[in-house]
Length: 308
Length: 304
Image 1 (cartoon, one colour):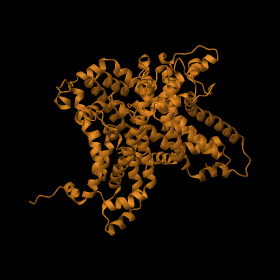
Image 2 (tube, rainbow over the protein chains, first blue to last red):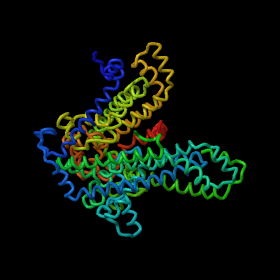
Image 3 (cartoon, chains in turn green, blue):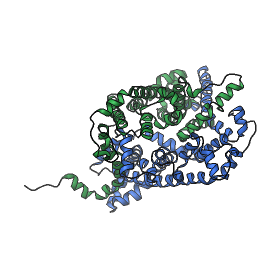
Image 4 (tube, rainbow over the protein chains, first blue to last red):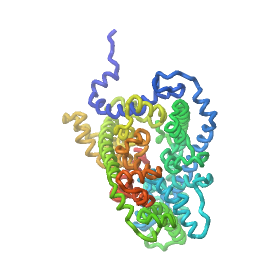
């Protein structure tokens, strides 16, 4: 029997320019994503620098036991999920509201300026947002305390106030993301067929009725899809935000520490490789499962928009 | 959108008046809230040190002084160095990233590429599963020796899968017939990519390029992970700023290296002046570039 060339090899020859063109990007992804992926074995090992990723001895589930017994697993998981849920709900609500308001307003300049101003925070780095936080909440010189003092009130020490941080983080997340989402939803509203609104006008529908019965149902698929996709990333904290906004302030870590900040801090300060890899794998694994579930849900609702 | 035009000639109903008032109020309040932190930083940076120590930062400074900016320009070396690093990384990263991404996007968008679904998934998979920070960090430092290397500031965010897929869907919308005729004229893939795919997806390239550039300009994370404290000369702008803001001594130390005593340093307004200088270019360019970003968000939202 004549041995057939594998179709892949045949394609490799036939389309060699194409394969060559995709190679550089593929190499970057292999180096930055796939090879490190193999490093998840580290979660089951006692890392020593000499042995490296593959030469270090196996320790079974010890790293996981350590992570879960430290008590950090529960706090960080809880914080990650609750914060993401809060961000998702508050931001989505604000984004849709702003998009509807902007879409119905007539003033061209007002619209353009407000939209630009609200989109602006998206473009600055989290370090600068950190500077904003310092500027506002610093105990000695912060603008908030300055304002309180000028009213004759006592200054507040926000850096040790656990109750304040969830609120601050939610507001900061909205500050940074509302503009982006508004642009997105506005695009989806502008795409609605204008005839529907005209027909509603002829029937004497009020503004509220048009929003309730035309705009909202028309953007529903977009909202549902983005919402479900966001569920898939609910285990991933917005690392840069938590790191810069809370500044790793030890006094409020209970309510501000998410998995990503915990892992990074342990890695940088303690050089704790085994337990942090275990925490990382725990997060990646759960995230992956959530993405699969979210994708399945999207497939049920809007098959065209499923990721895979 | 088209709302106002349609209603011309008809009396304005009470619902619309209420709606308009509500819209103006809500949008004004939200915009003001978004602008406020920027204004606070700006006004803080032109305040005097003693005024801040006395009254705290305020929206409208009692006296205006450019002392902080003057001091910044007296010790410009580190700031300029940081600017240099950021500009180098941004230009190199954007150029390389755009090149690699657009080439891959071209291949994934061509319908006669038999393995395009598999290869797309190969890229896509990395955005839904990863090995986590630690193995990545160890691989980069122990095996690739990226410690204190400028590559560590470029490579990690060079190829972004989302941008790849955006460019791919952009190129998918180029009429198939154009590719066909190029092929008939005897053009190879490289030629088709250069002469047809790239020129016809200019808007997409501009958008994705700007997003990549923004990511490089705003990056501080890779610097934090891979640069030692001793390599301040390699700090990009944002990480340099981060250091000034978080380490109380950083500002005075920088001044001391230039022979200026710590007591002369208006440290509070200088922190903010530094923030202004680091963000300035983005704010200045923003009005001109905003429309490309809006386009990018829109492509991302409406899956092509």
